[in-house]
Image (cartoon, rainbow, N blue to C red; front, side):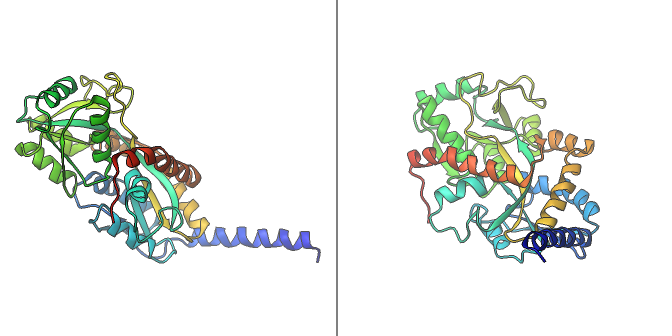
Length: 323
């Protein structure tokens, strides 16, 4: 048998094996790890497509919230999980692209230890102010910060989180000062804004933000991106005020590195159908304040790398380094 024929047969065997493996998946419940507390944006996204993914793979999707340490606990759990397609991770731009910049001793490598599956959502975020503060626009916020340097407090999901980096960038570009107060997640930041404990926040424009804004507990004073937000049509964009956000946030699905490519491709195809579903698109916008999205595994890997590459100079300038 010639070498060329042996190679051709090997390719055929791998193709058939991959097809059989994909057809057999899934034969038991699939665990979806959410490295964030219940009620936050990541959790809401997971639960929106979880039932649809369950129907696609023919097995229950078990939601497993493992919050803590700026997503490191949950992400680390998946990094060490068997690479068989039965443990998946929903993660974010911050967890996969920023944490490697700011944590010196991560117990995993976000590139080496994970197999990207697909992007599922891009998030529109907003600058928020407390309903108890007399701040109704970005211009008023900047003026107040300049008049009372250090008086305004802003909340984030922790040092190095997307809200932290975005609001620090706002401080640098607008030449203002605000005091950073870190919290565990979005629910805690909204509570602090509503009570007046902090005056400023930055997060995705999902259901909790919209509900709090309707009640008057908070105000949405600016949105990211270059176009108006369908949920907040009268609110100016950061671009209109010359203050773009660092990165548009996103959520994506990953598997442990070494997960068979056939399973990764099947999951990618299933997610591609889900994110085009009208009900999911409406939920993405109306409930979660984002845009349903899909990508190839390769595109997600490139997107993750772009976050790290673009934010590295910002993190260095802010001198953020954690153990």
